[in-house]
Image (cartoon, rainbow, N blue to C red; front, side, top):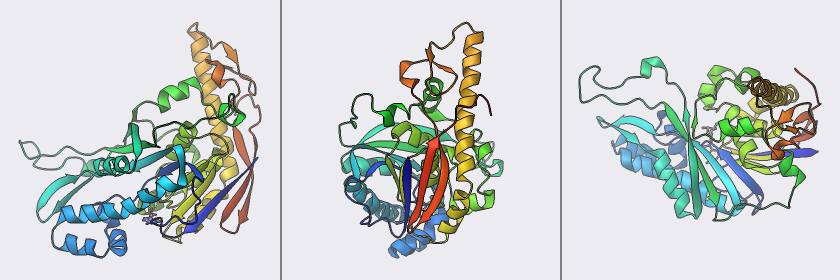
Length: 354
Ligand SMILES: C[S@@+](CC[C@H](N)C(=O)[O-])C[C@H]1O[C@@H](n2cnc3c(N)ncnc32)[C@H](O)[C@@H]1O
């Protein structure tokens, strides 16, 4: 099995290199309006944003920053198949402009933007990430009423393109082989994620903390989970705000195709470094999932409630019939092509333990 991973260095407000209905899933994290690290980027896209900030007009700056993101959302309706899903990681911003502190509610503004474009909102995920303790409490300390709650969460907003879900032929291999384990379903489809830093993070030594801060990269676990949750093998995942390519790396590990758009050409080199280890990474991820599953089976068996079904490809049991055909894939080869990579995948071997 092969997948391709294309990168376009360019402005995602015009996705003309992507054909109509060429995308099955969007996983992305845009620059967050009113977070200072993105002021210059937004001002490059619309110079009146700098004027609004200089004049102390936070509301106008916020609106114009979202206008830039809206142009990208306009394109998604065209490139995404009917029933395709958008998973959008966004945080609200707190900021003092012209002496006045407030929240700029990015998530609420983006929900409105998608609804008005005919996307249906689906239940979203609160991603809870601990803030640095120095920044933790804002306001007037121990006396009421002028202290502020610290934002320690971001959102993963989920939308469907149109009213109907995607359909597949009955028992489609590419869907059933991409199944996830019952206990993964229980963790992944919960609406508060507190466990993101921990699992795949320990496998991913490929991006240092400083670069992560400068590029605002999300942990690999975020796109990897979302891709496993909302797409099947062979699907195509788009990230219009590609950054250092974490979504494409996750798509490679999950055997899906990907397309990325990024304004900053220098990030492509970072991505090349990350791809150099993708074989090992994909193998580690598959093996870690299998090992965790075997621990779960052992625990359930000890509790007198062993899973009832045999997995077809691995020497383990599973809780439901739907999981029996699970077949992980690892990256066998990564070949550079003109605008990205072609990846050869092979089934992850039926090892007993890593
Ligand atoms: C929050 S970062 C994404 C980080 C990414 N998820 C990762 O893991 O590296 C947003 C990225 O969007 C890019 N960007 C912003 N506006 C863009 C536009 N109109 N077209 C293409 N890329 C854009 C920025 O250069 C930045 O790299």
